[in-house]
Length: 198
Image (cartoon, rainbow, N blue to C red):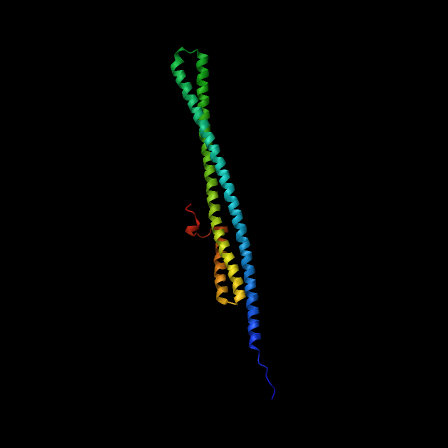
């Protein structure tokens, strides 16, 4: 009767551990790729938010300059109107015409500045909306990065301890991180605490 060689239990365990280690290592690599994508999205969102904020600040400064010029023209017009009312009857016709032409010029400038500042205000508000949108995106990316970094650490621990529960925990974290990354790029779903009250 021939002897049947039974498989060594340690060898079976080692094969299972190697298989588990390979799968976890592959998953960890995928987590790292998603982390890189989230990090890139976060950097881009931050850059765009800062740029929009700077441009909005520039527009508001330009708006203030227009408001000052509008008021200056309005004051000059009022001053000339008061002087014309006071001295008008005693003025020579050509002097009166010059005063009236200047008053009309200042009134026209005042109207122009008023129209221009409305356009500038609209542009500044548009840039502020863009800034807020990118800030919202950045919040998704920040949380995604944290969860993906924790997932990578936990999956590494699961390899060392050969622990499936720790790996599954890291997998859950990575899935949530991936979902947040998608949310950062698309804002296709809304998580209220990630939208700083905008």
